[in-house]
Amino acid sequence: MSATPQKNRATRRVLAAAAGLATVGALVAAMPAGAHDRGHGHGHKPRTVDVQLLSFNDLHGNLEPPAGSAGNVSETQPDGTVKAIPAGGVEYLATSLRTARKGNPYSVTAAGGDMVGASPLLSGLFHDEPTIEALNGLDLDVTAVGNHEFDEGAAELARLQNGGCHPVEGCYEKGKKFKGADFPYLAANVTKEKTGRPLLKPYTVWKKNGVKIGFIGVTLEGTPDIVTANGVKGLKFHDEVETINKYARELDRKGVKSIVALIHEGGAPASTSYNYDCDSPGAGDGISGPIVDIAKGITPKVDALVTGHTHQAYVCTVPDPSGKPRMVTSASSFGKLYTDTTLTYDRRTKDIVRTSVKSANHVVTRDQAKATDMTRLIDRWNKLAAPIASKPQGWISADINGRGSTAPEKPLGNVIADAQLEGLAPADKGGAEVAFMNPGGIRADLVHKASGSEGDGVVTYGEAFTVQPFTNMMNVVDLTGAQLVTALQQQVSGSNQASPKILQVSKGLTYTLDLTKSGADRVVADTIKLNGEAIDPARTYRVAMNEFLAGGGDGFAALGEGTNKLVGASDLDLFNAYLAAHSTAAAPLAPPATDRITVIQ
View 1 (cartoon, one colour):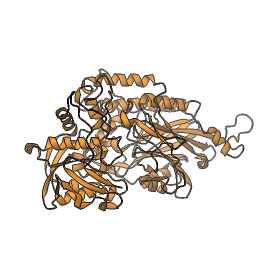
View 2 (cartoon, rainbow, N blue to C red):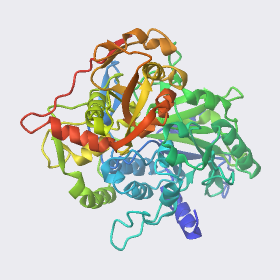
View 3 (cartoon, helix red, strand yellow):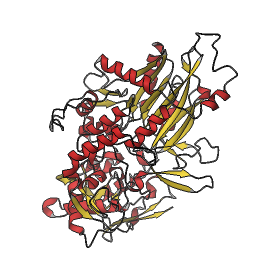
View 4 (cartoon, one colour):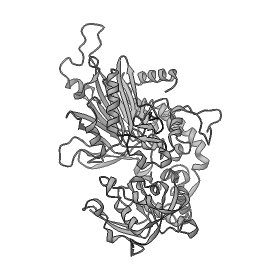
C-alpha cells in the first residue's frame, strides 16, 4: 500500500474487527492449568492470546448468491444422509464475518486468491471494481493472488490494487474514481522477467498490541498453463514451497515468528461435504492433490496454510517436514463458506502454539439478515448493468447444468460445444467439423427459475455472461486425427492424470472413457468416432476451440499444435446466437442428452 494514512486506517479497522470463537472453551480446556493466564497480580498481560483467523477463497466476483446447484454446499447429516444447503452472496458473507468477529478482540481476515475473474456480469462488466469495493467493505485484511487475478494482465491487477479508472472504459460513475483495494494483494512467487523483482508485495505483517502475524501469499506455479498468454506476459512464476520458505526465513529474521501462508493451490478431500472430518483415519480418507506435497515441503516456521483453487471445502492436518501436524484449510468457493481458525499466540516466544490450533468451516447461510451496505452496493451496480444484463437471449425448459454437474459430460457443456461448432462450421467461418470446450470455462448453470423480473425459463444476457464470462475469441485450426486422439488422451494423462479434465465435445464425436484403467489408456482409442466413422490418424480435421485451449492451456499440448488458424467470434457471442436460433418462448431449449462419452467406472 502506498499512503500511510491508508495503512493506519487498515490497522485501526483490523483492531476494530478483530474476532470470534466457538472453540475458545475447548482450547482453554486443552491447555495445562494456568497456561492461558500466566499473569500474576495486576498489570501483567496473559502469556497467550487467541487470534481469530477468518478466511475464504475463490469468490470470483459472486456478489449476488450464486444460482442453482452452483450455489449449494453439501452437509452430511447425523444419520449419514447428505443435504444441499443454499449458501453465499456478499450480503450474507458480510453478516457471517461480522457476527463471527464479535467478542474477538484479535481477529484478522485473509483470502486465498481468485477474488475476481470469471465473474458474473454484475462484477465482470465493470472489470471487477464492484468486487474490490465489496471486499473493502468486508474488512478483508490480506489476500494472495490467484490465477484469475492475471486474466486481464499485470497492469490491470496493479490497477485493482492501486485504483484509478479503467484505461479503455474510464470511470463508471460520474465524478467517482475507483479507489482500489485497501488490503494488500500478495504475490511472493510472481516476478517481473525484466528485473527479477516481485510484481507485488510478497508478504505483509498484521500487528495489534504487540501481537505480530506474518502472511505470505503465492499463486500456483502452473498459473501460466491455465491463463491466456497475454495475462502472464512478462512475468515468471516460481515454486510455491521454495518461495514460501525463503520469505518465512526473512520474516523470522525480522522477529516475526507467527506465519500464515496463503496459497492459491489446493486438493480434493475424500468427501465433498463441508463438515467431513478430513482427519478421519479410514482407508481412502483425508485429502489428495497438489497441496499435500506442498504442505509437506513448507518449513515448520509456517503455522497454518489457507488454500484455494480447487473450490473444495476442507479442514485437514498435513504433517510439516518435522512430522508435526499443521492445519490446511479451504472454504469451497463463491463465498458459500468461511473458515474460522483459532491461533493461540504465545507472547514470550512470539509464536503460535501449534498443538492448540483449532479450525472449522461454517456455512454462509441465506436465512440470516442481509448486510445493508452490501445490498446498497449490489443495487447501485445492478442499476448500471441493467440495460445490458436484462436483455433476453433465449428460453430453456428446465435447468441445464454446467458448473453444478459432477459428471464428465455436462448438459451445458454439450450446448456450448454445439454452439461453437454451429457458429464456426460454415466454410467462411472456419469450416469446423468438431468443437472442444474446457470444463473449467463453464462457470455456472443455466437456471430455469427467474433471477430477476424476466420470467422463468428466460435466459438473459447477464445469465449467459455468467456461464461464459471470459469472452474468449474462438479459433478454428487444422489438427491431424492422431493429434485429436492424443488431445483426448491428455484429458486423463500427463498433468491431468491425477484430476482429469474432460473436454466437452460437440454432437457427432463419441468415445468410451474407461475409468477402471489408468493414464492415457482410459480413453479407449478405437472407440473414438466422428459422425459414426473411426478417426483417421492421417487425415486433417478442422477443430473449433477457444483461444485458451488453442494455446495448449489446461495441459492440452496437442491442441496447441494446430495450424492454419482462423480467429472467429467470441465464445459468448456464439453461445447467445445458438440460444436465439434454437429456442422460442413457445419452444424452449431442453437439456440435451449426455450420450457422447460412454463412461465405464
